Length: 525
Image (cartoon, rainbow, N blue to C red; front, top):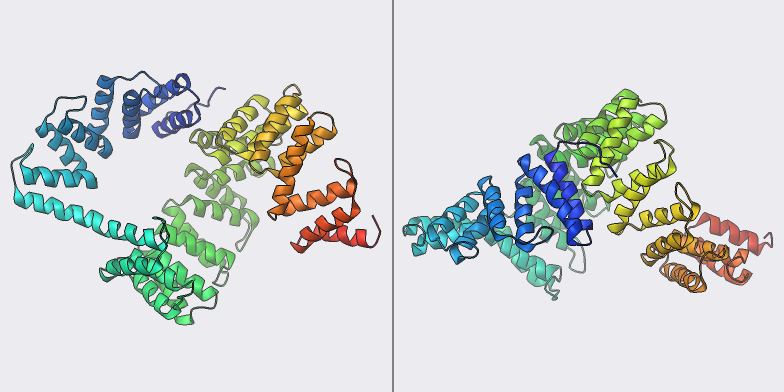
């Protein structure tokens, strides 16, 4: 399939990365090299580094130590910290290059100035030992202090996390709290947040103390702490003063330019989540976030103006914000523009740009975009139907484990939509999706069995999967079993079992099952 043209180094990089993730063998992986090289020609240092790694590991091209070092140096000279660190290690240890402590120090120093903690430590040690540079205790101490600042809080938080969240196999919140308190005493906002979180839940709940820690963290600009206080207020666990403090603090964070905070607050006012709905404030905060480059805020504004939700409907303004969201990489903004074209409220130029943007997102590895674009080409409702493109993107999404895409591929082969009908191929895709718990694929296998297109073994497997999903509380699976026993097409008719399954799904709130059960018990079915 031919890709739409692009001169974007980041896009070339993402496409190469996609090839690497989906390739089955070295021959396929070698195709990524061409795209990484195109990306590096545009100045992408991550592409330079990836080429170096490919030559080091023989992952695509053949192993080549000379090219590995050449590309590593190219990336390092252009500011890639990991490449600088690796070259420092190589020159220190004499791996693939002649040992040279002066050269090692040069690369370590460059990586250290790029804030690489491992390189910072190496620079400190080399100043201490006089390796590759003249001994200098003061410089050694300075770099060691910098290393400590980089790592001490992080290491303590890792230790606290490991006990608090059982990351080391031992769950001991008391010890976790102790280590968080060490950092908390040094005014570490994240540690205060973790302490507030732990004190707001579980057996040792202490809301006033939790709010105290969260307040302190919020004063340091910790947005998650302010949001948690709002949630506690919404649950009735914190008072009005906590709510007012949280709102005031979030507002301060927004004024300091935090676009994520502006997006959160804007959505709160738009949805009436904890705060009273307020269209004017929603737009004010969402625009602040959007102007700062937050794609989700751009999309939300597009939706509000499109639907006339809390603002006067303005389709031109909606298209403008969706375009901004699309350019910032929001998939749903591109989809919205495509749908607006279908509804006659966006022009052809906008449609073409949205379709191109959606394909670019596919190339970056966005599985939802692949599924959506494949679905567009399969259905041919807004775009011209194209079975080749549909199968290409749906199969690519399937390689990333997307069961919905596998199901759609199965439907294409089963129905012969743009391809020859192929029941065995359809069954293969449905089976793969059913293994991942896709209810619709399991049901499709049963329907194929009814049409004598699937064998008994596949039928039994599909029926067992539906029963397993039903046992796990899947309402659709429960309702499906009720319908199957009621109709008696695929399995023997059994009204009592039908009632039993409908009763279970009705208990879970399924209206269809409730009505069917009522009709059965009144002997209307």
